[in-house]
Image 1 (cartoon, rainbow, N blue to C red):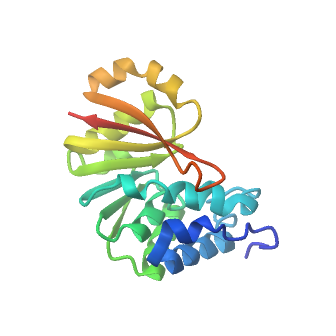
Image 2: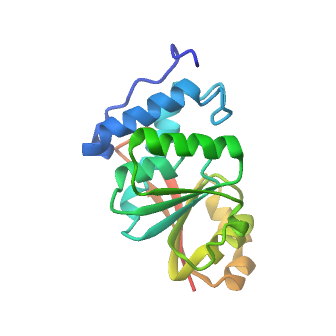
Length: 211
């Protein structure tokens, strides 16, 4: 059990973003605070910014999703996949994660939170047998676009959409990924900044259509 003395208090923005789903959001944040460090899901310095940097950072992406089947590649602690599944019960989520203990965590949280819209797949993205099956794919801070696109774009149906959470260097990543864009038919790339005026730390999302 993690020492929670340093846990960040719930920001006011949590109620704004989660709305009617706030109780489930709190339950997930509590579980991550209790066991996240022990299971290697979050680092030892993350409790003071658990809500701001992780939970709300993920929650901001929810309005960009549309009803359909969404894959979360390298789901890990469930960021953003479990947060988004809490907020968007109208969307079906496939959480793709290769590590056994993280898969166990994800399944435990799906059960504890009563999420009927989530499937957990233990696999690397390129081995998940989901090629061409997803409407949107998300991932959070996995790797640079030129590395990430070859493992995410093939999962999408023609006309599917990448919705990837990125850091401040995403514009430079776009410039370095032009060849990869052409190879995987990635077009209309854009960077969206979410949460300005709502949260302390904004979220950058790379969005593009594939095929």
